[in-house]
Length: 301
Image (cartoon, rainbow, N blue to C red):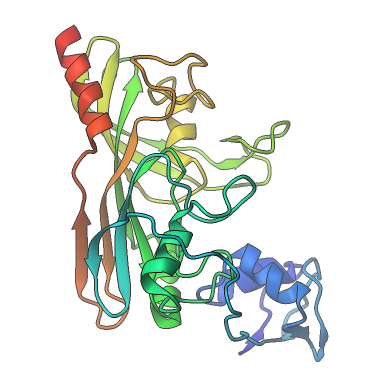
């Protein structure tokens, strides 16, 4: 792949993430570090500042064998064809291997059920994973079964044409029936595991919300993501004074109504099929834990 720089001073990794379909910034950095990217014929560095018309050549390596142990983990597949599958992930299941979770992740389960029939663009630890949801968020997750599907779906994520709708129970009551939070999100300045609303080293983030039902002290809302930043709904709801019930990271530090993790469910996923462009809409009912909280709230009044 040959690309040409067009913005003076732009970093090489940022340029690749912006112009090369299917590449996230972290994936671009991996390619650069492994020697697959050359700038004007010489090996590039991720923080190289580009000049207009610099020639950038990118080699996409073949997927390396995945050194992850396949494990039989029950997965609820709610949609599948030759290119894509959509999984309804339960609360508590980690998406890909990381410290403390090497053999009990969704990826381990995918390798058991689908073997090498997954895309390799996102690296050895994340075969097929186009996007992710937090461990304690339940709901729909798209998985690419080949590199074509991965590239197209990643592009839809990037241009915000993939629709994602979440149900959440938040603390407090809203005066309005609907609204929008438009506030940039970046890494927290002192706690690197957290995100926050900030103007520094941040990216635009937009969440649209509407009230589904009101309860005493809590509200059931539905959120549509216009962007997809890390922890976006959790950060935005806390920012406007309505943290998600059970979110002890961004909200109240003590468990409420028996919930010690966020009541957040990805219930609707919409995308254009990567092969023929037809619209695909997948839905997942509210999980039992979410229904039980709503029943408790209904009894409270």
